Amino acid sequence: MTDQKTVITLLCERAADVDGICDKAGNCTTVDGLKVVKLPCSGMVQPLMIEGAFKAGASGVIVTGCQIGDCYYREGNRMIRERLLGERTPGLKKTVERRRVLALWLSRLQRGKFEAEAKEFVAYIKGLEPLAAAPAAAPKPAPAAKPAAPAVAPSEDKKEDAKAAIESKPTAETTPADADKAAEAKVDAATTSGDKPAEEKKAEESKAEEKKD
Image (cartoon, rainbow, N blue to C red):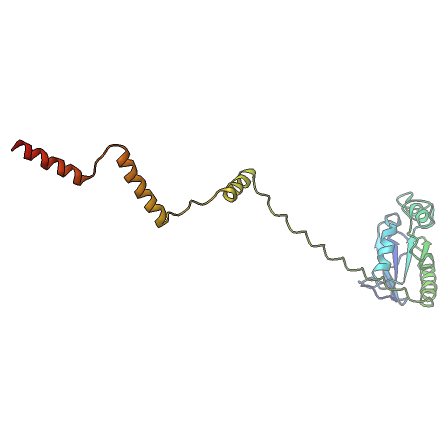
């Protein structure tokens, strides 16, 4: 996280020579509150990089490239210049305060001019109100509970089984009265079929024996 008092300069390594006035961390020793980030060409600077510097906490950004028409990569400085002016896409978002962005086009020998311009810009930025902190992202709503799974409908076979069980009647138990009726029915059946009781048979057999004698 960058200190909000810090101004970042995205500097082409072939523009103003700052090697003698920067420490290993990139802090400019002659301009308080200035940090240097070197790039092979200013044409590599994208608006997203500038926006990222502000999101990281920088209070201002200086884009420093070669003099216009003297770019080592021919059109690099023109490209970023047009993006900053809104003449080429992608450009800076409307949320970026343009007054906090400065562009310098300097030769390698113009270190003194770089220091003077940078000091003036840093002082100007310090006079502005601090940048408002980005609002915290609203928490995501909890996912809605999934509805309960519907009960599984019984298959047609199970429906038929249940219907048969409901419609069927239990077998009646045999009562003593029913047993008596059954016995009487057996006697009646024996009489009807011509069978005689055992006593009558014995009497007839006795008579037959007497006649023989």
